[in-house]
Length: 148
Image (cartoon, helix red, strand yellow):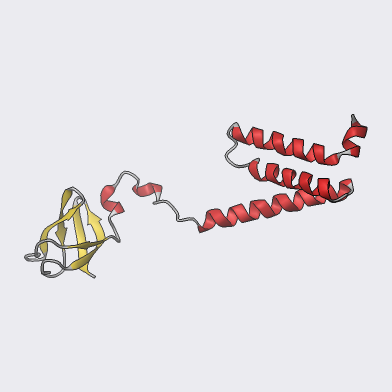
């Protein structure tokens, strides 16, 4: 059996890649995906190019590191989800949101419509209807806004 593997090393790498990818499907959350892909690519390279076992191991290691590094960069560039601290605090999720007033604020107080809800708002000064505002803070159910 060892003679067969030494005679056709690409079979070993393709089988290893298949096993790692199959194990990944069992739910390892991406840990085996990149090693499995690196093993398959190594198997394809060994099939085309006659490489010694040392070069095969180095090729596998380098491909695994490159794949993991590229995956890590891609994950870091993705948009980050909202912080878990405000997961169930809808008011806190509104901080920083730009909105438009439907009615004027009188004495710095009024209401604003967000989706299907009406929120009480307070500002430092009166603002006319159709003003663009930004939510700067939340106190209970009261949104503090300022003109944008």
